Every structure is written in structure tokens, then in C-alpha cells.
Image 1: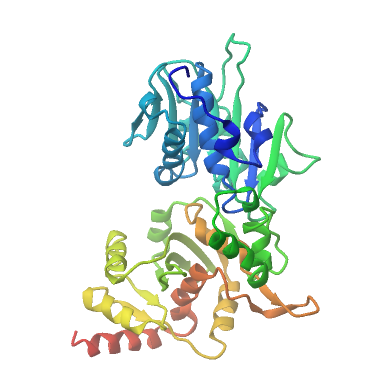
Image 2 (image 1 turned 180 degrees about the vertical axis):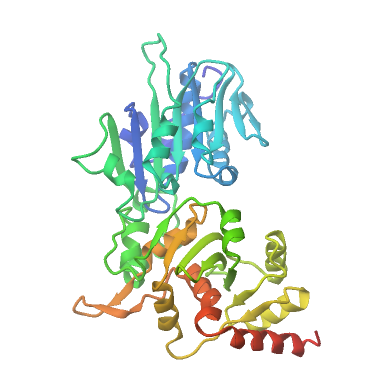
Length: 428
């Protein structure tokens, strides 16, 4: 580190993470709210420590490899730039990985798509000593977590040597195994340092960001508990308690059941446009949610290309009826089986009731869907009594799911007539 400029760690990371930064416990765990700078702090820490300890190599992981480039990899490159050491690091976009040029130490980024493959990873210089598991809540089983941790092994004569697993996530449901093994006093792992952080420790958030978080306490207190306070979500008041996260073979399900449906909810600047895709097993009353899209600022052309990329131009899709012009534009472009939803008095309650009659399985790659199911709650009256009306917030995927299921409880004839009229009006 002699060739880099001396930096102030306290100025680099700000407040709230001093003990976390210096912890050498085997498990170093942080759960936190949105905007609590946990990922940025970990990225800075890894780069800083790698240049300090020549025996160290790091494995950075998320549940699915395709989520790494836009999250951990980007944060690590940012951390290199922040510490003015870009000339000492080589990045490889295709793998992806990063190499510390003076020693050849590496930061490897891998998905946990197959946990057993992780255990065979080796490095040329030094040992694989550190691991960062980002968005660890995406891991659906403790067994997979244990298998991944086993990839850290070996010893080194340097007296400064230590191995460490860093775990970061936004908490959702309090039934997740992470709570039991890291936060519950009676069952937590030995040699663990665990903290909870919030957006309040992030000095670099602007006032608009802070107001957005604070407004949740008024509009959706149950979600504010998670998003703002970094606390565990609870099942009390949830609209749906009939779901679970399961890793399943999507193609196998589609082939076996052969009943697939898609729904879309439209937004733009503040609200996202969403798409949700499911396999529906009507005989066994099961819904298998296997794909999602969640993005703000999408125009018609963006939507068309997204659907084309997912090979859904000929698929049966039910879209939010509040956007008839957008639906018409997409149909004109060639999304010919897209039609509007059927809205009316009581339609939300009816759609929810229908979904509550199924067992719903969510693929772990559908992170936004998982979030919404874990935070979609009923309203309360002034006395604290639960009402039979959901809070209209953080439900963009769930609205799309309701639309996609209309044809099964409102009848296929209705949506086929809507589709026919839409095509007829365009002369198709």
C-alpha cells in the first residue's frame, strides 16, 4: 500500500460502521434498511484490507450470478476509485473478477446457482480467506448456506491471518434462517459480530431520499419497519400467508403443467412497470411464479423490447386497464395477445380472495415478488383493528399477478372478447 495516497478511513466510510469495519470475527453480519450504505462500506473494506494483507483472496457471491455485475462488482470498482488506487487494480468484466496487481491477489465474483461448484474454487496466490455474501436473504435454505461457507479453508503462518464471512441483507420475514443463526440469542453462531443499520447513518443521502423513507411511516408502517428501521418483517396483518420461496426447475414445471399466464402493471416516473409470469396448476390449486420484471421510466419501445427478449410477443398477457393507449400501442407493435384487465367494484378484494385459495411458490430469483409478498398488509382502523382492505402500496407485482389470474376466475370469454375488440379496432 506504499504507492497509494494515505486516506482517512473515518472520512471514507462516515459513521455507523466503526466496529463492523474492524471486526475480525468469523461471521460479520449486517442487516439494514435501504440506503444504509452497507454494501458500499463492505466494498470499501474489502479493497482496503486486500491491499493490507497479501495472503488474502475474496469470494463475492449472490444467489444468482446475473445479479453480480450491477451490484457487488460495480460497488467494488467504485471503492477502488474512492481510494485512488485504480492504477493498482485490474478488472475483468467477462468473469467478472478483480486482481490486485502488486501481488496477484484476486476478488472472484460467483453466483450460488450451484453451491457444490463453489466449494471447488481455488486461487493461485495466497488462500481463499474471505467471503462476502450479498443479499443473503435470497438464499432459501440453511443447507446451501453451510455448503458455501465450507469453501473457506486452510491456514497461514502470518500472525495477522484470519478467515471471515461477511453477510449483508435487507430483512424481510422473521422466519428466515438468518435470524435464527445470527440474531437470536439462544441459537446464534459463535464468533459472530452482527449489527443492524438504517438510512440514518448515511450522511450522503439527500433530503429528498430521507423524506421518501420517512413518508413510509405514515403510508405503510409495516413496510417502514423493514425498509426504514432494518427490522424483521412479521406475518401479522399480511394479506398473503400462503406462499413460500422454493427453487424449482421452471422449464420442467411449464412442460408438466402447460398452463402459463402473465400480467403487467404500468407505471413511469414514481411507480415501476412490472411483469410477472406464473405456471398455474388449477387441479392442485398451485401457482409457481418463475419470472418478474420491475423497472421505472419505461416507454412503449422499452416495454416491447423487454417482452421480445423474454419471448412473450405471442403470449397471453393481461395489462392494467388504466393504460388503454399503452396497451393499444403495444398491440400495434405486435404484442397481439395483450389485453386489458377487468376492473370494477370489489375487483381487488375478489382477486385477492382468489389468490388466497392457492398455494403460491416463488422462485428465489424473483426478489421483488418476494419483497411484496412479505410486506403487503391490511389496513388498520384508529383502534388498531385489522380491516379487510389492503394498504395500496408496494403492490405493483401483486397487481400484475391479480390481472394475470383474471381469466381463471372471471372467465376466459371475457378477456378473449376484450382481446378481439382491441385487435378489431386496429384492423387486425
